Length: 278
Image 1: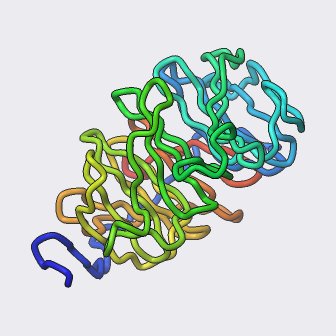
Image 2 (image 1 turned 180 degrees about the horizontal axis):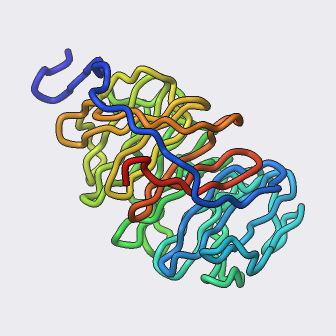
Image 3 (image 1 turned 30 degrees about the vertical axis):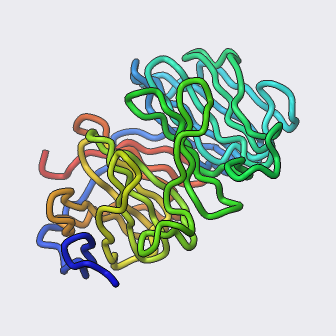
């Protein structure tokens, strides 16, 4: 039985603000971009699925380095589904190779993390589609084959399963993406809901959303998007506070706020926007 004190299921009200963003700059000519991340030194890393590449750009949009190509060796990919910059390292979810590849800030190969040697064991993962590293250095991986999230420690030892069949009301059905906030809470898109877990993997809240979101990000602001709409959510009361309007013709892949700008990724471009009234 669901406890009213332990779970919040909210229909998010019509937002009170609607902010229009205007274009500042744009990087284009990707083939099929899947994700991006902004590093500690403000360089930008973009993963491109069709070319199986990761591309590093400076803040002016100049290409600094490319790595990749189809394959299963180091620095090769078979669908780089996600990328995450943490400290001075870059982590890529190499989906069809069932692994996470790790690079330094200049995209030099360091190592890989996978559970292939433990295939068939309870906590091995396949087809990772989202990767995050916590402030403690733990790997958090979306195991898309099993609709769950797995957490591993610094040494690659299994730590916990999040959202598995044993999670009751907080079990994941079709998770597509997740992010962490500054306190270590985990926000997972699952259909038309966001399921929230505390830093210990316990269910905290369930939010009903007006869209089937495809991506979620947190960099001081919690943002969700589908291919056409962008919403900002208050992390205290879980209500939508703003709709962000961007005049873009292509489908939205991901949006992230960095300082006073918003970076929006489509399959073909990464654009930087600012608020109209700023």
